[in-house]
Image 1 (tube, rainbow, N blue to C red):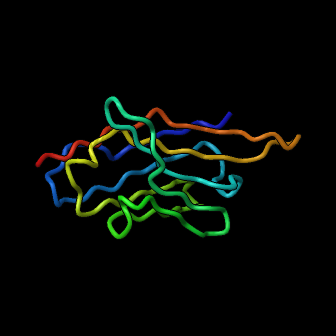
Image 2: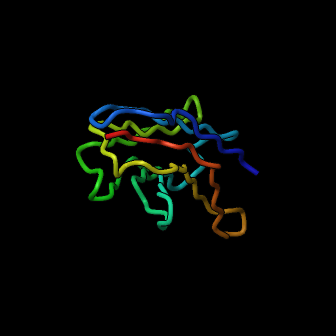
Amino acid sequence: QAQVVESGGGLVQAGGSLRLSCTTSISISSFHVMGWYRQAPGKQRDMVATIFNGGSTNYADFVKGRFAISRDNANHTLYLQMSSLKSEDTAVYYCHFFRFGALGEGRDYWGKGTLVTVSS
């Protein structure tokens, strides 16, 4: 079972930047897709950004041009660089990994989340 740990959250003023990190206990090259999700109080969890094993990326419309997802295979780390932060970006951010198991079953791995608070 892979361990997934996020870090880098905190309090930042609107217009500022933060970089979130997510490390795993196994090689991230073994995952088919990796991503960041967020959940604000009282709201559903939404996809923020994903990156596939081949390198292609997807972003939610509400972060396009402001956030960037990247990975460091050597250090088993996934990143989310957040810029031009807005108060509505306040949420708990989770990283997610997905891969197929030996029998073809899908396996999801979630971190416990890191809180980002943007003050206006």
